[in-house]
Amino acid sequence: MKKKLGTLFTLTMALALTLGLTACGTDPIDLPDDAVLIDVRTPSEFADGHLEGAINIDIQSAGFTDQISQLPTDGTYFVYCRSGNRSATAVRQMEQLGFTSLTDGGGVGAASQSTGIPVVQGP
Image: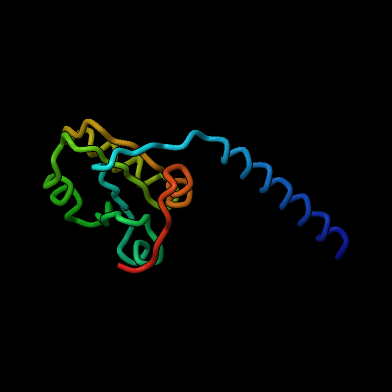
């Protein structure tokens, strides 16, 4: 039984590494200096680790639309979350509000990897 579990673990790790290397092949995103990084996760998720320089606007909060509406619609925005689901929803909502230059960065790990911006902890 131990040998089967070891083999299963080895195969799982090989698959994970293969898929991870495939994801590394994506082109890097070159953001303009004035781009605003928006983390749409909860404040506690944000504190656990976010892209350096990002602002936190929680898409699940009642005030999300009000907070987003205070931003200039002609700005450049890079939006990300934990896995990409909430960022996609936020980008759709922002488009409906008239925002024109949006990038859905997906999950925080992928966003860091594609932009080269490090993940930092704290508020």
